[in-house]
Image (cartoon, rainbow, N blue to C red; front, side):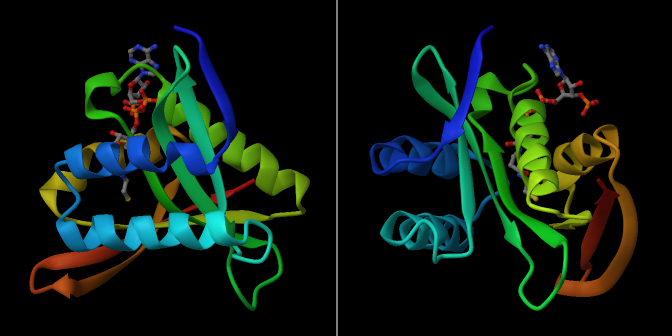
Amino acid sequence: MPVQIRTMRAADRPAIAEILKKTEAFVPADVEVALELIDCYLADSTGSGYHFLVADVNGQPAGYICYGPTPLTQGTWDIYWIATDPAQKGRGIGARLLKSAEENIRSAAGRQVLIETSSNPLYLEARRFYLGRGYINISSIPDFYSPGDNKITFRKLI
Ligand SMILES: CC(C)(COP(=O)(O)OP(=O)(O)OC[C@H]1O[C@@H](n2cnc3c(N)ncnc32)[C@H](O)[C@@H]1OP(=O)(O)O)[C@@H](O)C(=O)NCCC(=O)NCCS
């Protein structure tokens, strides 16, 4: 399946919003915040501090990733969001997006990538995905999101 990775443009917003809404793990507040970041980036792509890549399959957005340098650090970058259209999961789209983001981060003198996620069972797929891409679980903050829902941080040296 040919997947093309490119930077996000304004015309992608409706398709990405649909992907976010269809993603079971994301509650409406998550979707709202994810769209706010997209709007920040579309309003000022260089000044926003966010980078967005989109994966096209047959010319249609099938997933995206949002990442950026962690403020006040030297060479630490965060992956803020990643999502693949639920109908297209398990076909290598997420892996391609993450790999492209890591290559861009390395080119920008990034040293390490951090990803924060939740211990909620809805994120099990995402946690397995990160472990499979060479990320290591380096910390867990108990009851961070809500009682029983921990914040887990994954790290990869690049
Ligand atoms: C996490 C997520 C982005 C992964 O995206 P994806 O496109 O399904 O990822 P991939 O297809 O690249 O990889 C998924 C699995 O399919 C496998 N795979 C890769 N290419 C494949 C192919 N061509 N055919 C079948 N399987 C394939 C991968 O090996 C991987 O398995 P692994 O994790 O056991 O190593 C996706 O599941 C998602 O959108 N989840 C919901 C949103 C979410 O939780 N985001 C993270 C918030 S922290």
